[in-house]
Image 1: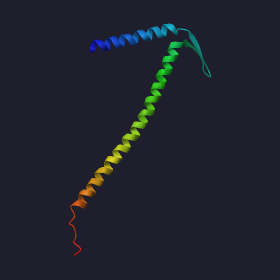
Image 2: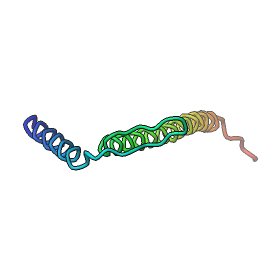
Image 3: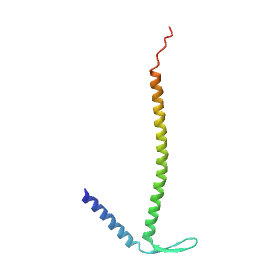
Image 4: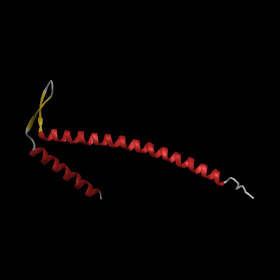
Length: 96
């Protein structure tokens, strides 16, 4: 299993190196106050990393909201079970 992991990582590294070699052209990024010249492959990797980071951030916010909802609903279930247990322990009054 470890060998497969190493082979997979080596394959990914080789793909990354070939991607960088194929996209070695320099591109110009114009900021408001500055201009940078960086390789296209670096720009693409930085854009990918920014997209992954923003996606993880938004998913984390959704996860935290859902986790809070889950905790609130678990408390509500416990309270309902407690009330149900108390009601089931009450004696039944006869109307006769």
